[in-house]
Length: 161
Image (tube, rainbow, N blue to C red):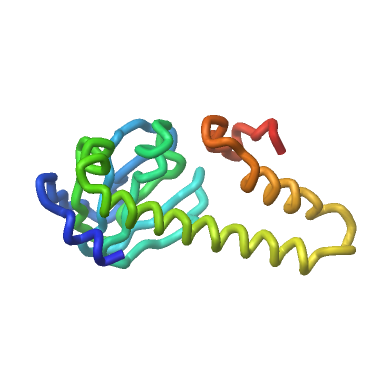
């Protein structure tokens, strides 16, 4: 995603000390962030689900594109520099190539999630019903109309599944 760095103009560069929250799960912003240097961790609740250290990594895109609060917390693991687009929706409209880069990144993530879930389904086929919901999750992800997308959490179950 280093190609995203070419679009880091017209916004604000921010310095974060280790332990500083960049975004908070459930909080609004409408901002898009690009990692310039350092390390960030993504948390769902109090569980770290990913560590990000690749310059050009994009954060906050799900909230911006869905018009919803942030689906995770992002915290600096070390002193970190990020680039902030304050009106992310406007920059994505002005820069369709940037929007396409982000769309490709999201498609790669979805492909990885689908592949992982399909592999789980295959591995546990015939091992009882405790993972039967994996098929339902895959079906839901494939057939869900965009207007019905809503993030779930361990505090709020998704009634479709």
